[in-house]
Image (cartoon, rainbow, N blue to C red; front, side, top):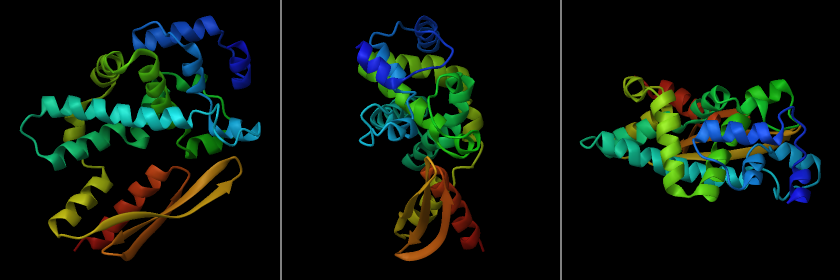
Length: 243
């Protein structure tokens, strides 16, 4: 275990005792496998720099799991509080709660920036999805450590009810992907987001995403976050389609 933790190379100013206390304050439960929570803050740029290109100690696998778990918890929550709303409404609301920018804002509120281990520059971190990815990875760590029920309780009690104004999100309409999806569904059009290019830019990746409607190319947009690139491409496509 000590060898594994040393591989993660956490040299931040917070002691392990303080980190455990922060995890407990954040989640409401005592962490069991603290190494999982450390791993949630290990960005892939650190792993790549050390030659661990397979992502063995980065947070990418935990992010993948956390994304699915968080999506399921939020879907279940809004399904119950809006029993008469249709699928389109629920899909759009879930996207507003768990989109990249929202997760980044939540991560910064919870102080994830004090623990994130990355070789990205300050500018690269600002442009990337590193904070949102760490947030999802943290959810994945909690799920492995404590199971679905405790993770669900933490997400609803400590995140949604305290930091997400669901009613305000209902009354805003900034999820361009959902808007474009609804437009295409109404007009019986096939919508796709294609990753046209993925290129290294220093320690980060730049994603080029293009919208295709009925196999016809529309707007292409590049960003360090794939989710942001999709949202911006959708937004600009909607502006093109507007009468």
